[in-house]
Length: 130
Image (cartoon, rainbow, N blue to C red):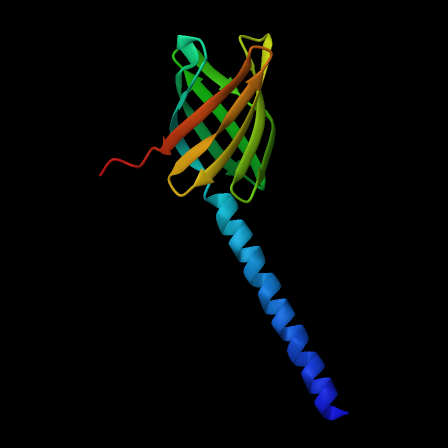
């Protein structure tokens, strides 16, 4: 009986440790999306071909902003899970554009969707100047 209890407690400890590892990995992965990203889009108006994406976090709330030559847009409906980023932005106050992005190290890839169609996005993390 003691051996059964010992085996059961050992299994529970292992499950707890593996769930903690998964939590740490998820948290690390979600924080990997934070930063400044230079990116380019295909099949869009030349004003929106290139931009800078700012992703920050304050008290468990993520903020995303996009800087284009004409100004900065604040994004809504931001969802960040692991290395995936989803958000919406209203361009020129009229057109709603949805973004679905994925971070792979210092690269960001994905697509945007609007009434005009979809666009491929590729970018790189803007590293600090040394």
